[in-house]
Length: 555
Image (cartoon, one colour):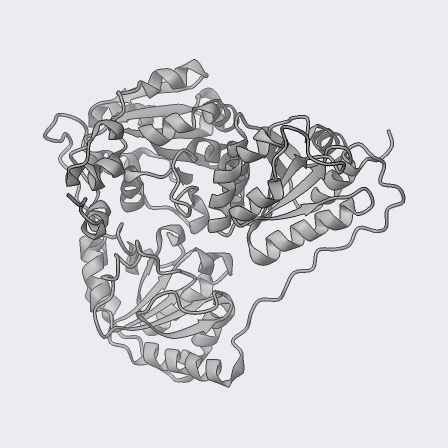
């Protein structure tokens, strides 16, 4: 069979990815045929095009590397846009291979896909007959260099064409990590090292950017040298090696005692974290006068509280700080040994049953943490319920936390995330958190999650018969509640319809089913869905912070 443009794209892309998620259609049929026949890459079919991008995104977050997804043209492509926007906002390197209108011009059903991709922040590379391999390399290079999704479009009338003589496929060239540069930056680095070495109550706060840069070992060493307490953003959980001195998630999902200790810190170093409104508790995280330094790759500091900003690679910078602190012969502060860290990071255990007789989500989260397999990847959809796993469930490392949807403030992306995380971590249990609203949005890929994860998958549906975040913010402000409510759905029955085991959980004792499931060999158990009938009366603390900054409706 002669080589085609689609085959050349598939072979070139497969040099950089090992897994592609998607749905076959007229626009990508020849690409997928070549991918499966001519490359070692694996393909997982999803049931909605949005799920293709979501699964690929989750595959990257759990396993690293370049993500890859595929969809057809037109309606297939437009179905990917919400997920594509999320991946752009979250800085996920991803290539989305799609069909596109023929080079002769748009058909009656075609849309301007380049403009649509650009509207959500994704650049499009369109292959031609003679440049398919080189264009594919450019798309890969762009995605990895700038950590954003790119769209790789194959015009319909080009897909089957013979590309003619093909030159050697060029290698992908990526930039070196950004070092600390210039006299000003080097002076600032010495200032940071001196401040940490002299601090009475130093704190290190790390985000996912620190993990991606490989800064974890150096951060642990810096914490030991300075005697700093440590903490992380939700996406940086588990990055510090000394958990006995770690306050857990800092910000809206932090424990009250941990928040109090953060406000006692006199010097804070923030590494690879954007200091968004949730981490900063809407500006209330640090006490006035705290000296805050930040290391990141953005053009400038991301919060007004930052006193000194170093734009440089996190790992290189933290290693340089370790050397500078050691050269100054600074003594560890002793602060972290003087406080009860375990007590500070403890959350309210809840009451078992809430006043309305439904399950207290705090108690459920606490019990789930005891029963879930320790080797787990926690995947979260968006919604009010996100507070519970982030508050109560420890994870081993940042690549064991996948939250697809939070960057774009979307819900309904949870179920297809399971497939991506399961493919990236074949030895781990994948645990999904979703609400009833987001779960209903993503039902098309309930079958995908069950099929791909099998006995390694658990879905926890926090079912409060409402869009909880909207009720907490706007219902309490007096807006009409009708659009915020959902008739209670039997998710356990829905799960059983696609081959999973479904359990309705109305009291803590019902969670013992999870313990029995976890004790069985993986090969002998099905995917498990727990339909938690939780009380809407128990509101996560971070929601109160959001309510406080949300304007009241005008009369």
